[in-house]
Image (tube, rainbow, N blue to C red; front, top):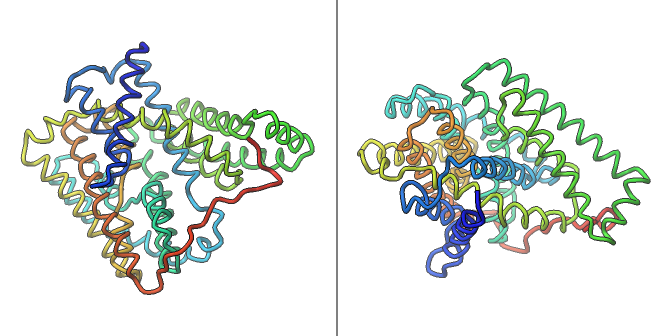
Length: 394
């Protein structure tokens, strides 16, 4: 890997903000980053080789960081979220139950024998995609809380199930690795809480705030990469480590400046690199080489939308909630990345899954727009992240 390649990757990542910031049409950042990756990868000018070892490793780091950010953004400390757990659990259960027949149908249509893969695609949601849109529109009310809780719970369930669905080796080892990573994450949570309450922790964090050591960030990165090391030792995906580390960070709670540091490191470099690498790995020509590949993308997007709309109606939520919850990005990206590396999907099938995820963003945008018109939904000041004056550190 050279500085030339690094320059191309960063330059490609800039296409995300350029496309997202267009006044005529606003799209999520990842759309531009994937498109840029396609342009410089095997489907475009072939300026970068996605198989280059260091590029691939940095992409896996970005993948872990993406799941870390997903976990961090889960509103686990929101009291309103806890009160909505019963309705959210019902909606999540209905999503997975309704996804089963769709999963079998999609597996038959695509000739991919992994039914669980399609069940997850139909039932999953994306907290990191929907919550920022809701916050941007300043929507609040009981319906918004229920919808957010449903999305968060479906997101967690999907990420927990994904390593088992995608396991190609010793399933017992994968399960053991997931259990060990979870136990280690619990230990990290206890350790971080103890450290923050101790006199040594208070002194060091006060010094960190004064001298700009970014101590909380360093500790969180140590936890993330330590859990990732443990996961890879047992053949478990780093997504388990990233997601577990993010949930621990969310539960522990951090000052606002910590999240700004994460955004700078993650959204500024590592996460765009992952999506650029993902785009560079996709062969778009395979997507349009067959009517079946295009049909698969449309079928997945339509199935996911129907599953979430039906689950919303059965759970007595507005159709707009179902449309909003149908958003996909983190899980399909993780799934395609793992499946292409393991040979479980062809490049054309991987392109179909990414295309379906991009289509789901359109239905999500429509759903959020309709949510603003639902009874009981108000538009007001968004909830800001808590600034812990006692523990804040830079």
